[in-house]
Image (tube, helix red, strand yellow):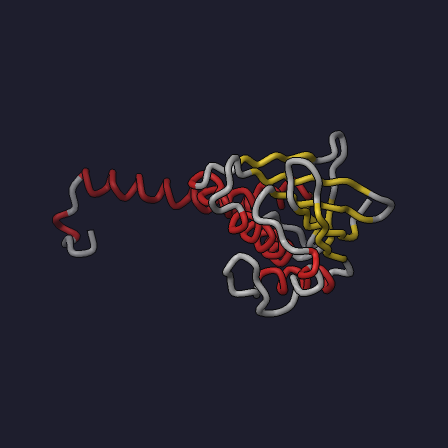
Length: 189
């Protein structure tokens, strides 16, 4: 189309433009649903989970990773934090879990959320490569990695979590899962 003279535009060109315009509008509409807008930066936790799934769906699908989600039912959980930063924090945790699942049979990630008094705890568990408990103190240090990554993702996740007056920790897990990352964040009631 860019090389077509205005006098040479055909009905087929116009139909193609209409189709492309429709795709662009749908893309913008989908993106606007991914990033919930709120003047006070308030968003629902389920929107965060949807966004993380969308960002990691290719890795989850291509690696046959099963994702189990357990969110509290019958309540809407809101966070009053910058959506993009919280999304980046959880995306970093998911990327780390996905990397640890390489060459694992039945790779699985479980996302489990529960509410305490004024905080939300989200656990991200996986059945990937174990981390030696001696390395737990180093896991959030800049440059430290057990997955061959840059060592920036978990460092950044901790930085953001603490910036939001939250806490992040790692613990060993029993049963199907080898480890759990726990994120504690303040919630709005």
